[in-house]
Length: 94
Image (cartoon, rainbow, N blue to C red; front, side, top):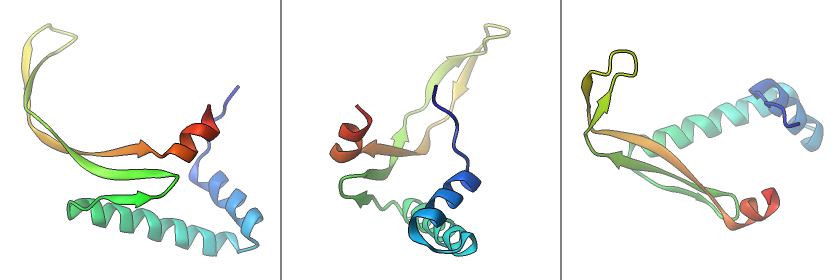
């Protein structure tokens, strides 16, 4: 059965693999997340060949329904981050 891997577990695994300290790996991981976030805020697309692509997608406004009351609600238009897996990642997970 698959388990959930959190940031601490990922940092530990990367530290073991790279022989870098956990502190250094955490700094790199935090910098990566911050840079991806910054680029997406600017509307840029990030492509990591073989791994995947991060991009911003626009969702149109739409009607929804409150599941508790059944009342109709308006869901506003918004921009959302999307990730599309690359070919190598898709093949590795098959």
